Length: 349
Image 1 (cartoon, rainbow, N blue to C red):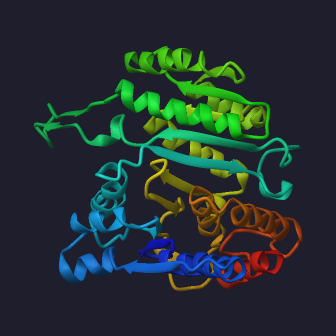
Image 2 (image 1 turned 90 degrees about the vertical axis):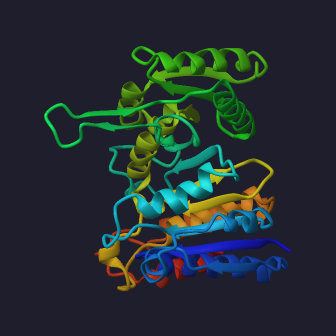
Image 3 (image 1 turned 90 degrees about the horizontal axis):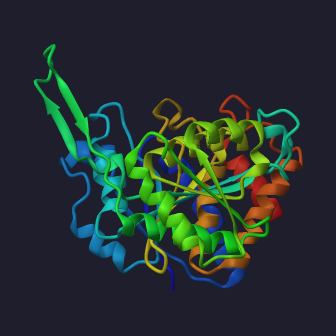
């Protein structure tokens, strides 16, 4: 029996998670899969009541489960980053070692992209982001803070192990894709010495994947090309910070944050899935937020758990719902209610 840990979190998190679980339960009913849902209270309200962010012991519980579904973390009443580091960072960077951040960038309907004359055939890529190293691990600090001589240092840590396992995952993923089998390395090797590990690793590992075309783009050029020629990209692999930036650009060209989902993956072990739009507290409780990113996260979770047929059906249902005319906009001003987005997907599912 698959056991799913659910952290609905803050702001709009509980609303979108409810819709994602509607789809998951439907899949369970139609496919004869009994999902066990274990909910956790972690987030702003829990922290304000108890002073507890997320105890380390919970990671041990997650290890016994099939996957984690996260809604959103963040609340303006609490120091920026405090809960995000404790909960999201604790899940990603700790003992679960979720070293792959997987971000599909897929255009379902032509009217959703801000790019002129681009169609779903042009925008269908996946970014493989190394998820546990780089600038985000927190090494560094400040000196003489608040004075004219203040210094701030943030260290970028890149290891061969961290790079190679991300690169191998990206090559394997490229081999499974239906497109032209091309892997693009996105880095800044013309300015950062740490990037040499990426260059050499892709070259050396790539020698084992002779069926896959290799390409390279500096991060600034990749941002330009993603806008101008998104059809050039199939699978791209990149470091933590650069991946964080370029995947949000990807979200914009696929239709916005309302569609963007993320998998934080340790292949073969428990992984975590989430929408990437944040908690949006100003929209909380209004029932107007688009839950499709969370439904997409559920689709990614099912695929990782081996329920590929169910995942494909969700993907196809989302495509049909978004091209049917039933969903005109993903904006909170569209007039659609949160549950109506899910209703449209469920009709085709």
